[in-house]
Image (cartoon, rainbow, N blue to C red; front, top):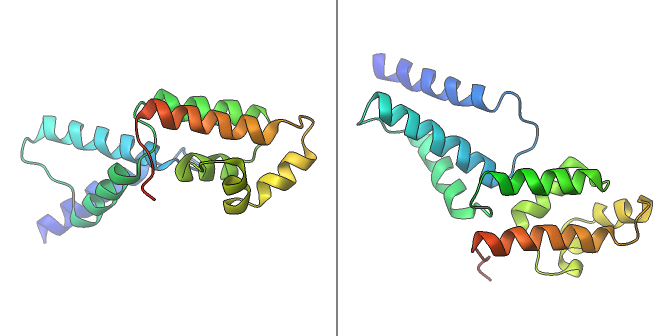
Length: 143
């Protein structure tokens, strides 16, 4: 019973880390969980995440698209200044489309956002920002 209570406390602590966040890149989730794990291992060297949290951490590590904590912030800031909505920004960062057609196919609201925006080059800017971060991270999507 005590172990179950500790696991529930661990999960609640992790949820508190997400309390102020709205939409997250998978890379953000990976960063939060990795930092949490490192902190816990400093306190207790044999600490391991509960099974469900470990599965989420493994998933986030596998599908993380950015390698540094500053890249997601840069992408969010740049794209939000150019009129993209939070869900579009996060989907672009997580999916990393290869070209504009793929981005518009995967995220149809981008076309509407681009049509409503003052800048006719918004879709190209959007794709350029995501692609640049994708290439600097050294990760590429498996086809």
